[in-house]
Length: 265
Image (cartoon, rainbow, N blue to C red):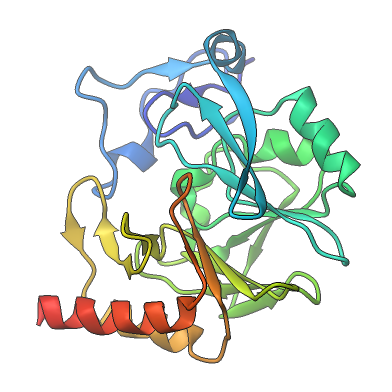
């Protein structure tokens, strides 16, 4: 039995003796099936051609895969005095990454913005003794590999610890969430692409589908703004290497909301 990974989105499926017939995540209109057709890869095959890399990204330890695999996002380690949390996820775990996280105090939990980044979240959890994986309940239909470690939380906010709070923003997905991080050196939002940091690194933007270029409606964007209004943050760490807003992020977010709403009016 093998837990196959979708070659297009990198999400791992429940163990089976043959590859699944299709990937619901890629068949959804927010993603797409490869032009060559649905295809699968095993973790062993991926490890033979790719490697996990660790880098400092604007002061946060980040993990990615080289050469680029699937969607290409990177994960972040939110280090706090109350326990470390892996934000978002990638499709590979390595002994080196495990050792580095343990050297920094271990891993207390995992939290993921939305299903495009679920990847091998269960493998990451099991590598650290089955730590909880916090996903919003509104996105439970996109869990392709169920596991007891998955916590499908409900509501609008969830404090993982005294430093980290999950906030349901919706938008890109109904359960799309960001994580607010209280820390020395300035509070931060870890946003995935629920808030997409633009290449200028001075604004964010919003989409229902990024690859298929379907914009998010005004009601959804206003809801995101309302969900984050009570939180103070100086930085936004996005989904991609180097795409972060460092300093003045709350003002940049407000300006981005106004700019976006004006553009679609």
